[in-house]
Length: 399
Image (cartoon, rainbow, N blue to C red):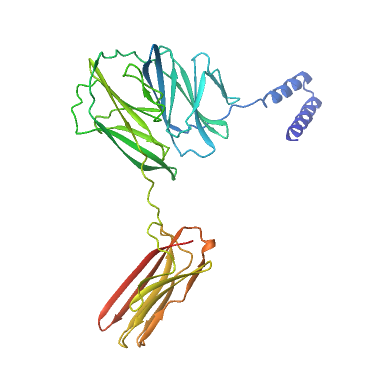
């Protein structure tokens, strides 16, 4: 409908021009120009990649000589669930990207970083060739950002004829959180070290390869590694090989390969993922429960059906108290407001002997989404014996 209206307005405008005595041919040319201006425009893409780096490695497997091209990247913001990072590999004069259609054609292969490793590994059985790559960020299947990379073929190394024993290796792993645009992303961090700080000055090459335990393997020459996911060179200043993975619960095999001028060696180790962080509700108590001693200061928690109730209590044993304050409150384990607000009582002299308590605080456990709740009470008393206060707090499971 919008296109029809546009055409009608254009024709009417041209008719007015014709009536003013101008050439009809010029009018037709003008109309043709208007029509052509509606051709498909190039898509405007935003550069969402913070950095992109490619490194090429030589690899020999039997009689075949490969090159492995590792493309590592960082995004400026955390990747959304509907987004994916896909790399395309092709011959430089064949692969191309059409900015009008948003389509890449002529590629040899394409690989998605489905493991959230911030890297993609391409392999090819001719180590002498140069390739062009397109690294793309797609949202719902459409390219929204793209980077072009051209690789440099690796040099074929001379495999040392002799064998050397590499120092023993160990690893440590932990979880790490990074923030992009305020959005947290959690990674598994793996550091592989040589034990006992050995002298590594004679080694010309020290590389570590990470992969699936049943897939990654050492080639027959005991020098090259095949079917790996990531590679890391030894950082002599940090003193370890470094890997990060978006797979928090994955186990890996890591193969370390080293060589001197005339000898080669390798080590391997299997990793176990770091344990998940302790639940924020760890150590929570189950209602009904009484926290403290009600003759001095306590917090009584009960559960009747779906209703959780808690009351703060204290007892006054003399008539000489000059001030009494008692409250009860709730919060989440992260410190936010809980399901019920603050309840408190406050008394000034004269204060009678007897038991004191706050009004009952009650909430429906079926409408509270957290697995536990933090319940607290604060008591202040002041009299001839001076000022004294006590504070009670506990985490209670919300069934």
